[in-house]
Image (spheres, one colour):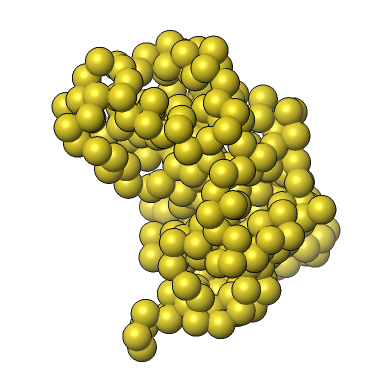
Length: 292
């Protein structure tokens, strides 16, 4: 069964587009990345999946159940970390977690205590006394405490220091091994590269690429840096060059390495560097060119 199915999902806020024609399919047991800059439509998509807002058109389902019709039932099987965490300001963390646990049938209390200990959650403090990072740690505990079948995470690492981020990723990998599905939204592609099986790229409310992480890396992209004797000749044979300084020009290339060398053989070169790109650079290449 698919954990998440989205068909032509569209949301307009008045005349302003949130998302348009989004299609997604996420099988159970996958860690699925949802990547795009702020304002691209990631949070709108997540709120539609959770039944917090209503679509203009299209539909979404979780475990085969319509997100609007069965929203209350679905949320019992979902753990959610919002991008901005604002729980009850005058409640202690301990009281809030007890209250959150009351919404679920099977909360693993021992696991909850372990999460609080590993994340150094200050359970006796009131929520309003916590820093942004400590608030996000409480959200992590609240999302994981009932061992949900699906985790929906909206920029979950915002505010977390690197050590806590590493712990979170370890928890998510353990949840995947247990059979849970993770929908991981981020604008930081390096996070997705470390964690996810597949990634969807969203731009201006529309998804323009869904790909396996491994396949993205295999698309024969190269980052080329060259110091030519005559830069004008380089610009004639290669597009999208960027000058880095000291006479060095940089560009992204995809295709046969032999073809690249044949092109470069037409100019006099003082220095040449050819490297594998990061996934971040691959994404930005897609984003700038508007590929689909």
